[in-house]
Image (cartoon, rainbow, N blue to C red; front, top):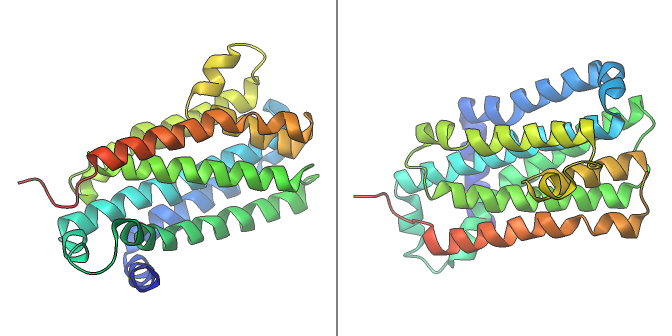
Length: 239
C-alpha cells in the first residue's frame, strides 16, 4: 500500500491541473473567507466559516481529486494491472487515496489553525477533530462511489460537480440558517449534520455528548456510499 501511495504522490506533484484543483483553489477560497471573516461572522458565525472551510477542502481537495485519480488509473489500466499482483483491493484503493487524504488533512489543519489564531478559536477541539474525520470519511466514500460513473479524468469535471457544489451549498445553508427549521431535512442531506457538528464544535453552543448524536447521518452516508462502491466499482474501462 505504501509503495502505491508513494507512486501516487509523485503523480500528483507532477500534475499541474490536479495541483491547481486540490491545492490552489481550496486555499484561495478559504483565504477569502478568512480575510472577510468579520462580514461572514455577521451573516452566520465563526463556526459557519469553519464549516465552509472544511467542506471547501473536502469537496475539492479530497473528493474531486480522488474521483479524478481513480478515473485516470482505470483509464490507463493501472487498476487492472495492480489486481494481478499480490495487493488486495483494499490495499490498492487505500494506497491511491492516501496521498490526497494526507494533503487535504494538512490543508484543513493549517488553514483552520490560521483561522483560529485570527478568531476566538474552536470551543471544543476534540469535537472538531471528530467532525472533520467524519466529513472526510463521507467524502472519500462518496468519491469511490462517484468514480464508478466517471469514465475519464475529463469526465470527472462533470460527475463531481453535483456533490462538490451541493455539499458546500448545504454547508452554507445550514451554517447560516441553523437547524431550528427543517431540522430533519437539513441533517439528512449530505454534509448537513457534519456542518452542524463543526458549528457546534467551534461555537460551543451544545454539550459534547449531545453533538456526537449528529454523527449518525454522516456515518449513514458513509455506509451507503461504501455499499454502492462495493457493488458497482469498475476496475477496467468499459468496452
